[in-house]
Length: 181
Image (cartoon, rainbow, N blue to C red; front, side, top):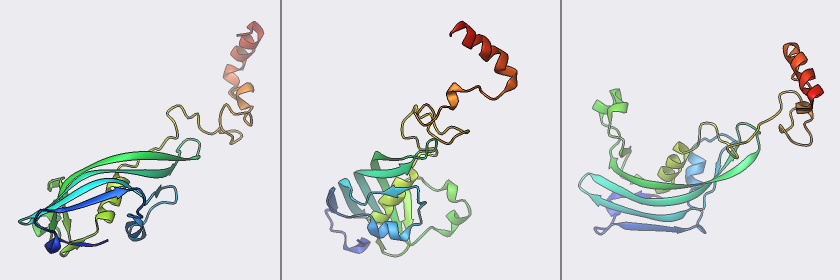
């Protein structure tokens, strides 16, 4: 869904998502993502877009579902994220003086090429910024056993019952077994 900046009504444009619409699919096709990250294209939320002068204001909240892979146990899990969007769009691309020092530009201004933009692509990029560096299925995820590859503490992993493998601790482990602690 492309929106032309010069066609935004004077009272603004209101976009509402109930979760039934496939809003992000076009954006997903245009952005390369890892196979460990999938973002559900069905969103819920409201966005208000208002154009005045050279700025187009983009304000609202959106809730979506991310399907990620746990960095400890490698299991797949879903994470619901709510984004609060509040920034300005400027057409014409990034000005030349900012191309040298792109980090110095205002964080709440996005520059778009031309006179149209895809709100789905912008929202998708905001979701991608919210992906955790090390996604965890749960805070206390034990991870995989380095010996057998099963989930630590599961019925498939019996390595915890065995010695630690470090001979320096073996005497202490024998004493612990002997005292029953």
